[in-house]
Length: 220
Image (tube, rainbow, N blue to C red; front, side, top):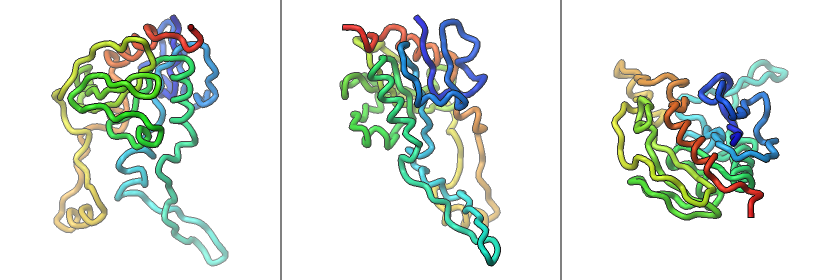
């Protein structure tokens, strides 16, 4: 069964696989209209703890009649251009699975049940939700992840804490950053941005298997 992989990185883990139709940014996955089941990775930047850009967010520079003027970067929580809403609609229409970081604010916004950190599937909306750490499936970090699967019987996964490094060792506020710099300390980046975002092949295969075993949205 062919699976549509939505909101994936061009040339990433979902490319070059038989019966996988990858949708990167150039194809605009919000326009996906079926009929294949989906694995959806909608962007998460505006749904996490640092939805506003974080303490290192830089202001925009706008030009007016008197020269450049600095303005705070305007960001709104959940302002992802409708990507999560479209991904949710696709997985509920065509079946499959949607992936987002643990504690994603999108869960509450769209009335999905927050799953227990220890593991197991819980019923929510028209499917099932769970928390699983990608460290069990080859990621260098623990990378706790929430899944929403629309399928008759979700599979058992490797539950509980995994081993792995922190995604990063940054600062939690601008004040903390200023104090650290004054003391001569700087943030330590444990994983690069591509490493943090990457889906390990073993975890990708789990998500594809969920999509392929799911009940099709147009089935009785």
